Structure formats: structure tokens, C-alpha cells
Image 1 (cartoon, rainbow, N blue to C red):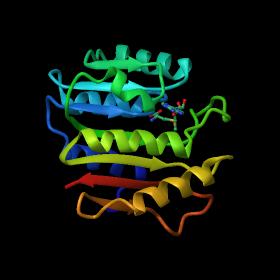
Image 2: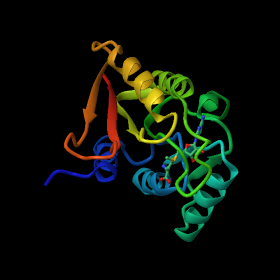
Image 3: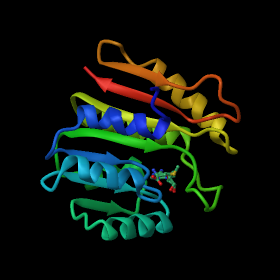
Image 4: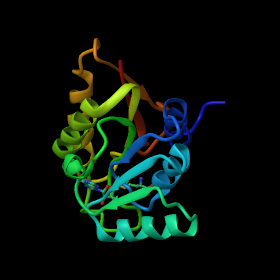
Length: 185
Ligand code: SAM
């Protein structure tokens, strides 16, 4: 059975993240991915979850509380500022969900330049074999230019340093999301 986008993004992390590692949720939103990776890294692991919107931080905080997760640091800041918060030298993996916070202000969106900047920072810190998973939502206003910028960037990454995968359902209508996964060699 082919896996859907959400399922496959989680599967990719499950296959590469080890318990005890530090993993980054670069866009925590409502906290669905944060909760998932918090379980994946286990109680001795650590999740750093970023979002620029206070509402997203609150939503994620609530979800984590309901699930009694204590290994997450929520950071109300842009993912471009990762180095201001990270104490560890190495990251086990990272996930981005591009676009806007569902059921919220559609004008607050991730943007190509900042996403690329954060991807580059994380790539430097990533363990060998680690993955950056990017779920590209692009059907909204501003989504197309971000999609084009990020695609241009990841296509140009040196194949000696990483492999880049695109996972996509090509017969779906209405600009469905797709996955980009960057694995460090
Ligand atoms: N993964 C989330 C979930 O499970 O609910 C959905 C994330 S939503 C598609 C994208 C989020 O990125 C929004 O909450 C938005 O506020 C956030 N965002 C936009 N620009 C950002 C930035 N520079 N740094 C961190 N978060 C950002």
C-alpha cells in the first residue's frame, strides 16, 4: 500500500531517528508532528519545536500536556534562530511543514528564503544518515514561490554530501502536498 503524505513523513523519521536523540520540529503548528517525534526520541531524547505564532505554541503546548510529554522545548521564534537555542552538537533529524497554520491567519506562512536558511543550518548539524523531511504545502497564496525556491535549492545540493528524495502523488488534483527528504551522507 502506498503511504499518504503524513504517514510517509513520519515513517521516514521513524526509520532514521534513534531514541535519545535531539530532533527539530521547525514548524510546530498544532503540534501533531511535535507529539509524534517526542514519542520517537523517547524520554531521554529532546525535541526543539519552533513557531513564529503564539497560537501555534499554545496549541502545541496543550497537546503535549494532554499526552504528558515532557521532553519538548517550545520556542516562540523563527526556525532561522535555531543556533540561539540548540545546546547539542548533533541533530538526529528535522521536519518542516510548510504553509500556514490550519484554521488560522493564512497570511502568516513559511517563506522560501527563511526555510532555505533553516534547512542549511540543520544540514550542518545533522548526523550522518539523518533526514530533513519537508512537507511542501503550496496551494495557498505565496506557496508557489516558496515551492519553487526550495526545489531550486534542494536540487542543487551536492550529491556527494546528501541524497534528496521527492515523494508525490502525481495524479491528485488541487495542488496536493509533497515530501522532500534530504539525507546526509
Ligand atoms: N506541523 C504542524 C502541525 O502538525 O499542525 C503544521 C505546521 S503549519 C503548516 C506551518 C507553521 O509554520 C505555521 O504554524 C506558521 O506559524 C509556522 N511558521 C511560519 N514561518 C515560520 C518560521 N520562520 N519559523 C517557524 N515557524 C514558522
